[in-house]
Length: 271
DNA sequence: ATGGCTTCATAGTGAAGA
View 1 (cartoon, rainbow, N blue to C red):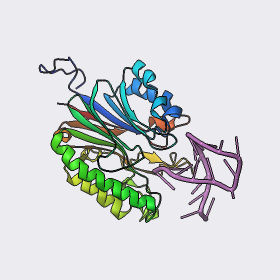
View 2: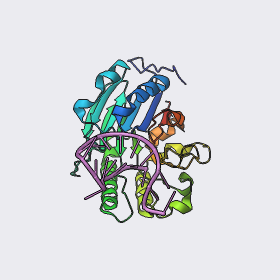
View 3: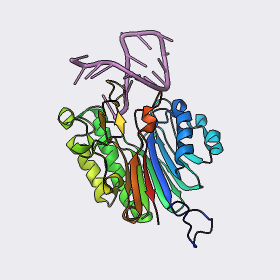
View 4: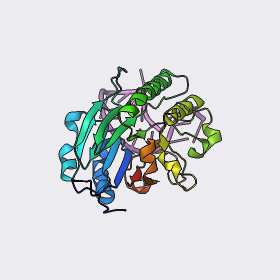
């Protein structure tokens, strides 16, 4: 499909879109890997989470040199989200409307004709904790807002670190994790509510290897033993899901020196 | 075994992540 051009496309851009997400666990530390990954994979859009840096530190010129524009919403130490894209982003929005929050967890922009929403959902720490309640409230506010956003932008992708493994097959050891944060029934119900808005998990639209995960603990040699969770997702509205030709997890960066604990996920769209 | 590792922070008796 690469290199296909449509008559209607006056900018001469291909109709294909590669849209990716990666929790980098500090953009400062991971920038060389991010630039390398962009160079190798050439996505049209890369959403980043846990950039962990204030906006004035954001490596905009490095990304520009790599051929990407970027919008970002960061803070010191924690959280932080960004969208890097090859074309001009429009209608940029920071945070969840109506949800007062110091934590930088959402940024949205229109790239070409697609509404891109980059999220870093709260971790929740432990079931029943204050942070767990905050996670559920954040997800509820996200879902309520998405309902309107989908009316404004029918071609919409919601991607990022959801901090939810939707099903037992997304968990390396479902018995050990049962009832834990990231897999608890209320979190999974919140994920299904998002799906019920008409957003489809692009990864599950295709045949996938068993035991496919996007996050592995740094400890216990968890990556080598594939003790992981699938918690990073790319959800597509119906018009985009129809044109999705692939969704893959790229484990290669997790094998490198000083990796993020998350792997990138990428979806490919074709008209 | 509530640990293990990594980051950012500060110099802790660390905090948080997932």
